[in-house]
Image (tube, rainbow, N blue to C red; front, side, top):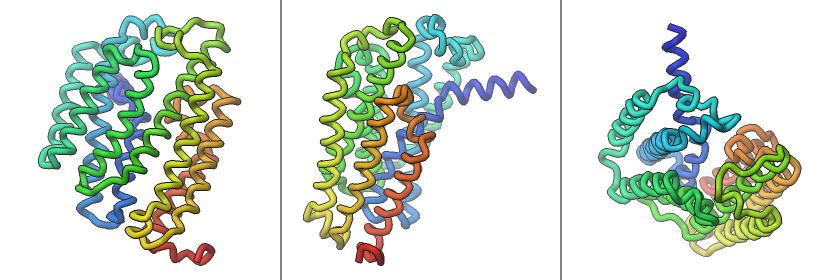
Length: 304
């Protein structure tokens, strides 16, 4: 029984569910389309979220099979289920098959555009796993494209139009997080006095990354602010007060930049978002305020 339980835990670990938080971007169109409290769009958005989760997990399994020998030589990654031998290659292939079958069932009957988006996301990430992750700059842009596909997928899943400003904002914030992650990886290596294990990291310099991160931080805030005051946004939501939520975006960016320069935690953006209490509280306040403004047309006492 204990062996079976250990294998099950290893299988879950191989799927990396802690990374599923990135797929929450799928729900952005649901919130900003004013369909959050409608059952059918909620169900479709949830199916889209789960589909991206299963697709991402499938890619992680392929990635671990491709990087098996390199992971075994790595002091931390050698503890991964495949590298440690807890799960065999045939076992990983069985799990991959199960995830793929479940994914197909989830997206069955959804819009053609959504299915195309999920397929594109899968193929793009396979290309990233086999080659593109070693291409300077393009490696981070592929990550950013993944976030944009999540937002588009969320919109196509519920058949709504997504604002170009939201897409642009997603591009900036994902590039911001991607380059911050690269900076964190380099900082960890430098503090340990170790050479980069990935060739692409040899091309990155901390001072250049700092400039790129600053540009994307500014782009995120500006794109979001312009979205909140765009005529179409004001017309749809019936309020011009969404601009006040920009303060939460600015705080989140500034807090993340602080962590980037004072800790090594940004090597794993998902861990930062789920463990840093100021960021967690800030996100909760941002979502709550957005929902109140969007669904109640700004009729909030302290803003009215």
